[in-house]
Image 1 (cartoon, rainbow, N blue to C red):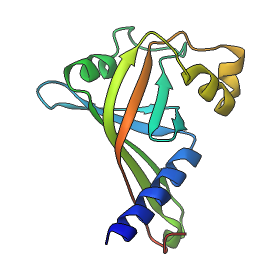
Image 2: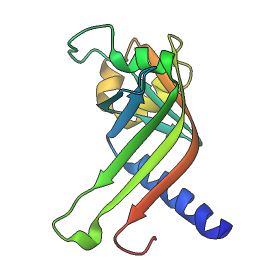
Image 3: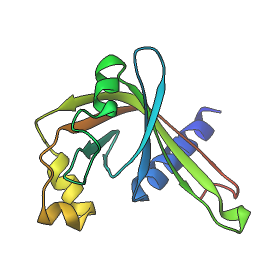
Image 4: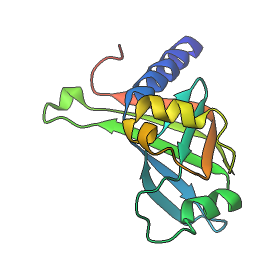
Length: 142
């Protein structure tokens, strides 16, 4: 069973790392959920994201306030296809922190997204220490 769980974890991490966008789920101190799409970079068991210059409704972002209140987060990537044998999803659950220091995030994000090479995000930055990778596939895991 441990070997199967490790295989699922490795598979989920690989699928997750290959996706272009994820959904970040946070919850406030009362447990009210909030879900937003993000771009990200995976570095071993760490996920990096940044608040960038794309237009936002406010600079006081709920995801940042939620992380301050409750650092437990989930991120989800998925693949849909009309051929349902091709469906899959991968999830990362972990502990998030917000920082004004980019650390490794800028370089990793710029590698994945050309927009960040042209206009590096000023932050703040979200770093997630992944505690658990999970996933599902309609076809056998490869």
